[in-house]
Length: 404
Image 1 (tube, rainbow, N blue to C red):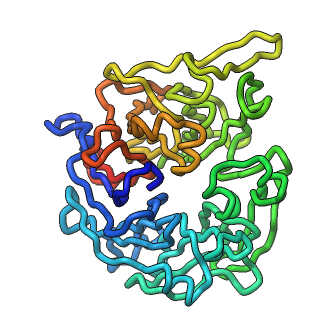
Image 2: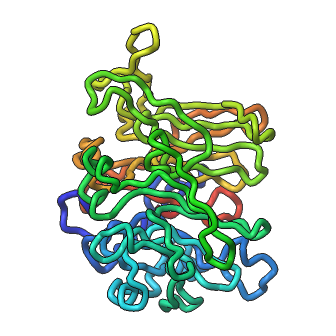
């Protein structure tokens, strides 16, 4: 979607076993049956929320299509190396029963239902956003939140049942962000700057947290990243734009990416009130050497980041989505955010496609290092350069396959 080629989006299976002859290669592609979907985030039908339920089976991968509104359900168990399409939830059914459109984040619930954040109504208005519920057979069940308790903007969400709380974040009105980023849309109030706190599982909006002008577009929020003073860009200051973050299973490290700046960070959070930067690598961004954009220090000096080549290839775009292996030793990174934004901020991705990297993690002392042996080039796809977004790791022995 968004590349200018009339081809369907697809789910790629990548071999991440270093002992395999097909290591760092796409070993299977599952194209969806329609064109124009924009597959974005993904989630499971069952996860840790179903712990203790012997009937729960993490078999199906849920693939919401941000632009078309379809939701694909993929069977990853029958043949994990070659997933197959199980069901399609059509957008007309979702709109008819809930009024929701632009599905984004999917999470499983302990009840067996699947919950999906939807970012607007069918006309792209943010006011119509909310949370969709699918039952265990992936039929449209209704909305999750109570009537009158929808957030003003939608994006990602996560819940903590022990605290009976869910928090959701903000992006913007689909009618705005699907056209690319426009500063006037910010002035017009078409982008969010709030976090929303809900009671769980009741669906009652308890608190709206205004992050102010410095908190615009809080896609993923944990640690403040100072904007860079820059030259030759659309603004005098460039935000990092944190687009994804995760925490290691042992709760020791937090990882996040700055899509515009171009760095991946690792923080030690053993003392949550005092996170310490433990690792940082530059894997792209708008201020890398060779770019017309330069960063300016407080004393007026200019600088650009050093971004290495991997297997003789220049790294394109900026780090966007991350996925951590279960042992915490491998962090995988892709670099497509959303096709219209890719085209606007990193037009080279349209011509050369995106890629997937592996970053090796020091889980003892902290530290990050790009693995020179792993590079998946989506610019060499059979149907032309493609844009890699979300990843899902199936688990197992931590050296299995990964789905993109």
